[in-house]
Length: 252
Image (spheres, rainbow, N blue to C red):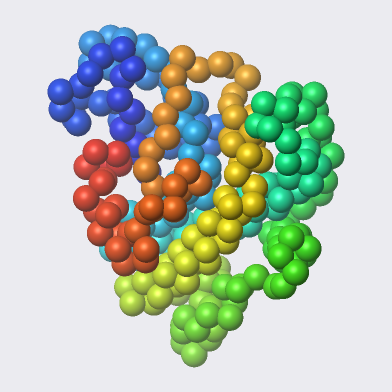
């Protein structure tokens, strides 16, 4: 997936004048616009936001298998995001934003980093961590995605994902739409509740993620599911329509 980055030193008259860059894992981009201006931009979006859009774009381009893979990856990274935010809220408290950022800079988030390393390569352990963190935070189990009924050769949802990713199964558009809707509503619902109870921690975590090599500019692109706003599309289907209209200005 490629994204368009506007130059911070000049105003491009046309979308095509914006530098087009490959998505990077670290979110840090060195840009040179058509006028020769060089800028280092840090993209502030969290991984799950971009991965979910990547899945939507793949489906719009009729790449159903890639769509399922990206949506499934977005779900996993969202669960990691949830574990981090809730754990940090309890480690750092509900102090003013400035105090939370200060405690971040003093390394009081390190216990989380050390603990996460023990599960970072094992998705099943990450899932278990999410389940129990959610239970402790909310007093009830999450409306987990395994309860959904996406069918693949008579199999349930988890087998559907595995069939696509590990067995080479080619899903229909209807199956991807159903899977995408379930993941979309799962993330959107839990994220809205998380913003309501942990907004200061989300903001502090977002600031703390900034690379040590300080960029000259930051950017946050609109995505179907956003940590900044709950005013996005209400469904996966509407999200695809929204993404289709947006892609010419943001994506390639």
